[in-house]
Length: 411
Image (cartoon, rainbow, N blue to C red; front, side, top):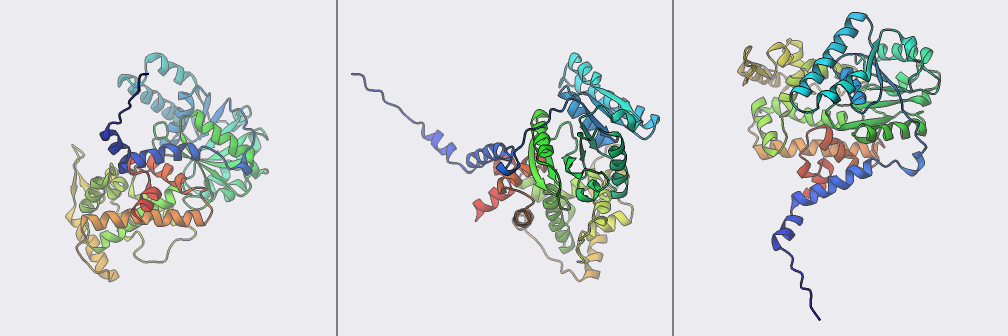
């Protein structure tokens, strides 16, 4: 009788037992768990056959492309014909670039473009199953839009807002049936970024939630259900991360030192470089709409100081860094460093040297601590859901498993 002898490669055991392997396995299963609704919320989803997107800005165009990429007809709504034509032309250009780079072929490009139409008339929304509002981040503006949607959309159509921070319950108060209102928080660029936060407001129906979670899968997104609160989960945690970085700038760390520490840790970009890229004024305006804004005078003071001076990042050629007008190359701006130092002096913040390890620890701890607070507030269902959010939407290294997993592993 032949005896079968099996051998196990010791190197394989070492790899499987490594911290990276464990972290990757954790996030693999976390992503699958996040897609499953709690039993109490499970309902039969509605089939989404046509969609409208309100707003043809950067985010609105990306969201429209998400649907077109998955053969879902989408209508883009703008306030006037000029803006509409500019938005549609920009979408056409984006698809042309994708074709030129080899990401899609010409047949796919044409198929996507045929899925997209435009209008300036809210009355044209009557046939659609879902509307995603992606207008300017202002509560009064969004409230007015939802009032119009309530007049022109079918009573069974789901109405979603792409707001990043604002109270969805207040937005939903503009419609007669707030149970059909929810959040669909995409991340820039919407047609590329994998994360989608589905936000449940206080009166959102199980049917609406089940529909949007299922739609997220259809769009190829890592879809996570979160609760309604300023910044939801991703931006609330990201704000804590950025706040810690801003505090260390007051303590004497330069933007270059802060960014390099986080890049060395595994982030693709440092926190101040991200602010400069997205626009320092974006966060500045968002913080002004926070109903629970901290009274701490140090709170985001460096960023607020730059915004007040008109240093808004790459788009103005100056932010935390100075940008070459020809090459766009970033360089440390010692005038900005000195400006922050003088502000810290006024605030009585002691200057000191921080090691790269200390910078990294404080930044990651800030995320995990805020994550625990989110779980306590009931705005997320699992700690692993927060890991999915950060790995897929906030640039957290996948091989570290996510902030909650990493913090637990570090004890």
